[in-house]
Picture 1: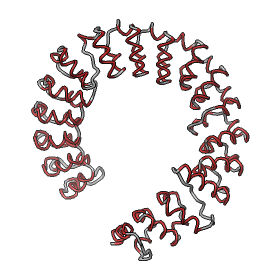
Picture 2: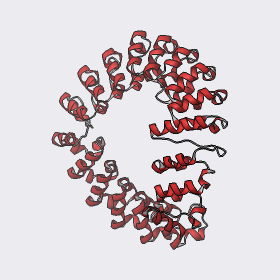
Picture 3: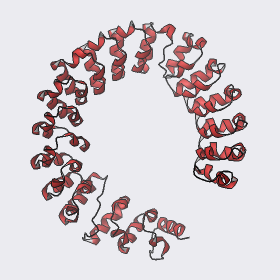
Picture 4: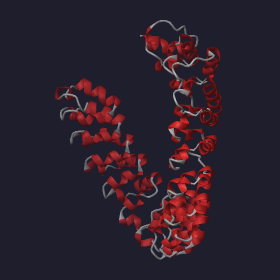
Length: 455
């Protein structure tokens, strides 16, 4: 619709068809169409936010707005002030999205039912409630019962309230007083709930080894909030990376070049390799020791090591997908590729074109892939193999059709096996199979799909 002519943007039938598929297409319609109630209703049924593109008149249409907020609570922000003060509409909005309360009228931000419903859907939105409700201890406790954790200013130095809020979420540490942010019990409780809560601790407690290690144990990234002193403390950083290797990212430059610390970090989390010094990214022992749960991390090894036959062989044994980051030379190495596909069948994708035509490598990939049950291979168009065995495999693994080569998708026998295994796959196959009456489907599901596409 965006690129349609002005004439077509005013074509009622065309716009109606468009908004039924994509509600936000209403934005490209003419002003006249944006004031067409039927079209706007269809648009908001598909996307509540589409109410923003309606005419001012229709933004005040109660039925339309109710439909919009039921689909998307935050659509409330685009309606008239009159309807932002409509209790039923606002209640429906906050049921869908607690955050919608921020767009309600001041009067309804003081409505207990609406505020508590909003908090039930978004734990922090009590901050948008009226000052009157925020100052009512009974209401505060009710928000806690519903999972809320926002602490109004009046109560931020109340330890009992702080503990109740933090019990729902460690994020509540953000809302306590500076005095309580320096309370060891409070802070420790918060970071046990949410590691990143340490961001809001006092500078004094960011230098507390127990507190920082507790946070790092929850999530390594929380180490970024530790004091500079601790980030330079070798003994402490060693302990931190042993708990979560990703903490290496926030260690001092000197310690990122400490061989033992980096070794401990990558053994815990292979991704830590990206934060090691360039010198240590070229250390064979460190790269081999890395826990490459994600092959993506191998890209951080030096170019020299990604071209080292012995190193790459060890790494692809751990995770065959690491072949993607090996040198082009090693992607042509039969033994390396064979080790990779033994580990992960889909690693065949990264092999040289020549080795994609190697029967033993492809068969190994198939067997490996069957065991991991996630991926398949891309076959070279020139490859020939035992078709009957392949067809038997496809009958139980039909979802892998997207990886089959074009040559095989033009093989009638294979197509029939696919469609009889799952008739709905016909929509992914070459058009000629749905236009020519060649396939004699056996399953009812196949017949239904075939008939539908052949019409």
